[in-house]
Image 1 (spheres, rainbow, N blue to C red):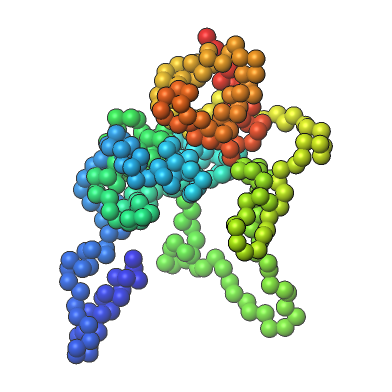
Image 2 (image 1 turned 180 degrees about the vertical axis):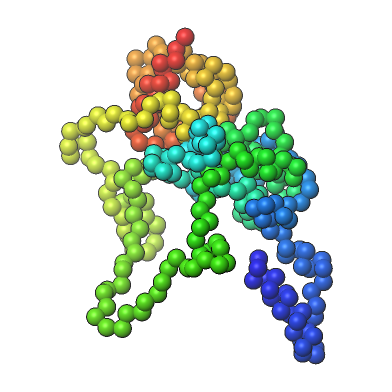
Length: 334
């Protein structure tokens, strides 16, 4: 944005210095580019949008890439999840500090609401950037906050309550500003010392998946393009390679339920988008393989069992965590 504005202003200056070279940018042209919203909300247009409206826009414009519930749909990283009510209270996401969440989500990281609003406004949807109206941008932002448990179902986000709403972001106190890249008077936090002799070999940058994610979507060796070189490693061990070892989750089912966004769709005693925890427990309590059956549904997802709303797959969770969730669900039978 700054580069584009400087280019326009340079053109204006050049028009004065060199006859026939460029022209002065008109106020409307500058206004069309100058759409960024600062953390102090300077540049934020007047308007509002409700969570209900945001759900409509999300399902039509966003869900194909970001998932019905912001869980990512295997295209982009998840928008919501990994935050708790305690994080919202303190303004610092605990799972960022202790590494307890299997992956980072947008709501885990973003410290300023203007960042979220501004990016949606200028870059979304992916196939048609800047096509959303001001009301739709407010509404989608409100819906994301609602999916993350930050605001209620009847909430309306507007330019009047943006600052008040930002004070509820789970990681609002997680941004560091005491470094040279933020303060004009500060010093850079990197130094370059060019080696001229007896230099160490250049570092090799490699890409890898953490252990918990290596088999999240099946065997990597089988996931190659139909053309070009074949690469990949075996991430699925054969059943006879070694005896199975039962791993116990270090997290309670209740903690996992809150930290992974389950509360967005399931109440304990009340139905939301999906059935209540109690209803699930009562339905499968008499099933001989209830725990394994429910764990399979959590991991792979399903649709049609409780209505038209699909249950997104939670394949990013470790098996022991999925088993802990299954146990916890079944313990709520009444």
